[in-house]
Length: 152
Image (cartoon, rainbow, N blue to C red; front, side, top):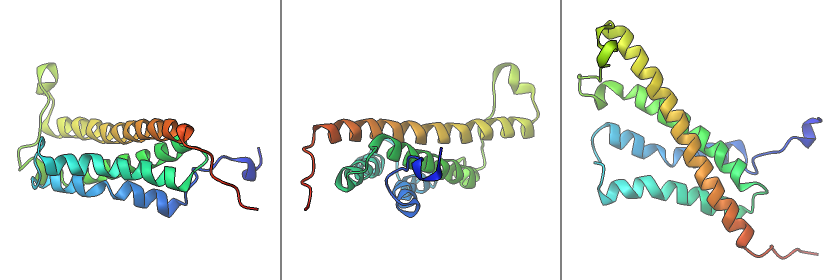
């Protein structure tokens, strides 16, 4: 396969990163305790960025909306992972989560490593799933839209 045959995500890398970053404020505001789950403001921070992602790929008529938004979602997952890890102590107010059951006997350091690794993986998976769902929605909507008029 030649480099020129490789499928591209349809937007430039800076555009993909920018789309992922518009969802970053919620991570910070939530971890700092400035917005609470179940509020209207939180809902705006949860739903508006993915809606913007979908609108952008539809507006730009990217060739593969699913792949494009999957990439954005993975980048968002990296933002989630880094944000939660960097704000871990603040978010847990000096009382980090611990393991229970048979794992409660592990040293506090080992428990924190295990919990943080799983939290990091969770952020990556969450981002990828959000991107995939948005990509599916954008793909479906793009199929329903009329073809753009061609210029001569």
